[in-house]
Length: 247
Ligand code: HPA
Image (tube, rainbow, N blue to C red; front, top):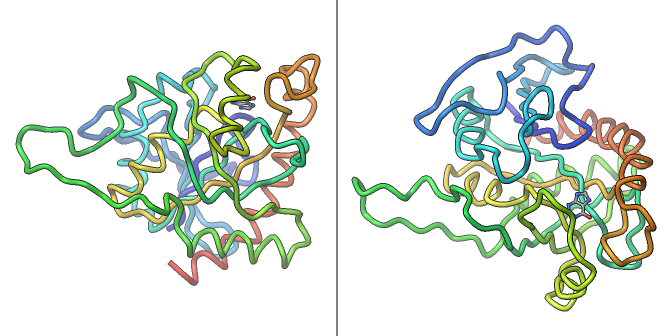
């Protein structure tokens, strides 16, 4: 089964209408919503909107541990996380889909590990390459096959939110080598790694980041979200069979 975690603009996917909702809880609390599990073109899929079915959970309040644990519980073998981001680099325009290959975590105060109990020995996971190569390749191949423009590679800056960044913060992220910025990439990616779930992020650029040209970031996000998500959805439909055969 392939799990798709939907972000802003993808709380609901009409392709999944009629899928049975699976309500479950986890040792870490409840996931953002019941998971929708079903079949898309012969591929077992489960879908979880990370902000909740009605988009009520801000990035810093999402129970990332419950979300990831729930995906594992229903039988996910890999995760594609769809995320809306802002572009830091001048050469990445709104509407672009990006397949990041690195992350820098600027978040704070989030429950960021399953290994924080006192009843187990200290455990570490490797995170040199935060995104899974096989899942990334399947998404990349699907983009090529379907003629969807997908930028391969880039560093995702995970910020705390829910506010957008200042111009100086974005300047700093650029100096750090970040190309795109979003609020939900961490600890989600690290938690997937702790559960040994192959995970990649399909990032949709909805706006130029703060101080990078937009007079209203929110208006720009609004303008590009729907068309970008439609593009991400067609890429996902192409990628699912590829993924299912590889993970
Ligand atoms: N910053 C952080 N998160 C975002 C942005 C942004 O500019 N756009 C969409 N999500």
